[in-house]
Amino acid sequence: MYKWLEKGFRVRLLAVLCLLVLAQARSAPAESTSGLVGQEMQAKQVAVIVNDEEANSVAVATYYQQARQIPEENVVHVRIPHSPHRLKVEEFNAFRQQIESRIGPEIQAIVLVWTAPYAVECNSITAALTLGFDAKQCKKTCAPGKPSPYFDSRSRQPYTDLGIRIAMLLPTDSIERAKLLIDRGVISDFRLQPATAYFLITSDKQRSSRAQLFPPSGKLPRLQFQIKTLHENEIAGEQDIMIYQTGRVSVPKLDTLGFLPGALADHLTSSGGDLLGTSQMSSLRWLDAGATASYGTVSEPCNYWQKFPHPQVLLRHYLAGETAIEAYWKSVAWPMQGVVIGEPLAAPYRRRNTGGP
Image (cartoon, rainbow, N blue to C red):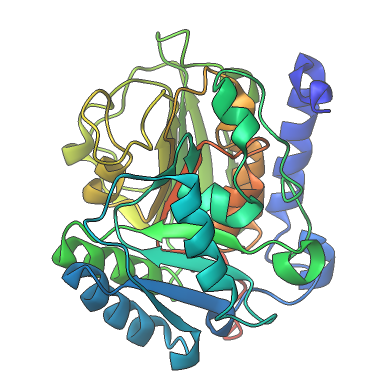
């Protein structure tokens, strides 16, 4: 289905077209720049799911609801004792049914306010909640995944248009870090800053399957944005990061970096989405370092690029003004093993009505 993306010359053509479209993104009317269908996602269309068995979940959910002015009727209380890392499918089905019975057709997205559970057997909890549990993937986790109908979609209303509610997990292992994460998301809405996307082609060949999809280096002056695609194993000391994508088991020198409010960052590796695991770097480390959203797989996916965020698709949708949850979900072709984490509504490139940053 996606074989055209594997052709080198077509990938390069897509990259060039992407840059040309984005360079005009803040000058033409919204309808003609993004080609997106429907109104942009609003806070009133987000459901907040809080685990009453976990004090951190309750505290962070309250803070998030107030920060984003989410209606009280959008808050759904559930009870998941002991915060297991993974749910059995029977437990998940009951949990999903409980959520679905409490929310109306206006809800387009769901944010789970906890760190665990983050998986349903071999599926991520965000993918299982969005698309339904996929038992076939668990028979062979290294097999190709089920295509997402939302991949590179033009829709701004996923439930209205496609019958799916996209889900994201807002981690709560630290109340203070969670509040800082939420603040970064909210702050990203108000001021456009000079920023850079860093795409690193590392010496780790197995985890560099996205290298063919990285866009060429270039500048987008109207967005105060530049792209740097580098043959480097890591970056250090950079203070203008809006996007950082790489392929490594663990990413060094995160403590030297400056992530701007709304920054997206992820690394292609087997178990970044095993958030509380220790075999590889958890995607939580990106958020700890200052990113606002990230992505990682909860079970061995093998290195299909389709199971990870597509660099150009992620870049295009985020710079067109979509939220972090939309951009990340639209960038993954086969998402069943990937958990999306962070502050869902961060949108640093959303069109501002004030006429300026």
